[in-house]
Image (cartoon, rainbow, N blue to C red; front, side, top):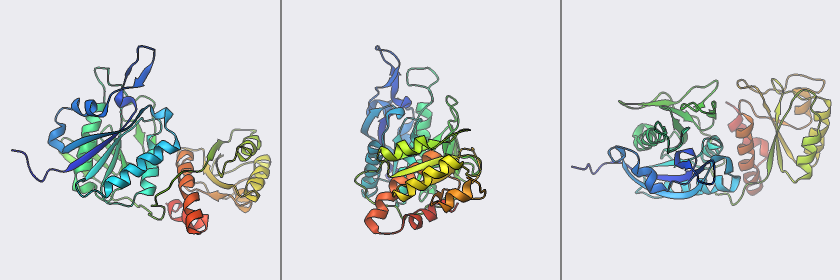
Length: 333
């Protein structure tokens, strides 16, 4: 007999490898409809009462900021529905961390929002999609997940949206949280949450669009040409993925000054996999970048800092709050 107290979970499908098969025209493409995706997961009905809602059917590598914002809007709308206990988003792994983080920034609800996908497409015998989707629904349906915000569930781990990054191109455990570790796990026994997550909620607004923010990675001998090109192309913000603890050089420093003078926000992150960006070194290093007006983004990686700045710029424009003040709670840990 079906339990009346069974949790109700909505699965938003956006495509990705989990919904992909080989295409006669060549390559593997997203082509599995949402309902078919659910029907291919054994025992899913035991985890929750589930319904699918197709948002897109594209690969993660085709995800653009406007698509990410549409997912965030749909999550916010579902949070307002009393008949929904949790949300799962199936998504391509290439950009999953970016959409998950945007949702986390713009969503202040208590209901779990769980992103999942696959590293092996739906046509291969050992596809990891069905298990990941079942695990994600279990996390979304579990009361222990309330208040975690957006998380990523793949390969049996639960990773916080802010910290998670794609760590391997093909391994089923695609994501890791360098310097932090997972917030939980999913086993045969159930969902295990190790610790709560800090979720600054000062960006939780309804946004109409996201501004252009470019990401520029430095390499030995880099000059300011890419920063200048981004500014000329109309970028309202720049993420500088800098050397070591957050250093540039004299040519980069000069262009950072020009960007700040032109009203283009500059956030500095490290190109290293772990550690914080901090303004320490002079002679063109991080101390001088900070003095020129660049904001240091702590432990965020480049793609996450870009998402944060894209969300914060319109919120600052709407609220009149200083950008640095809005960013501060998100960069403090």
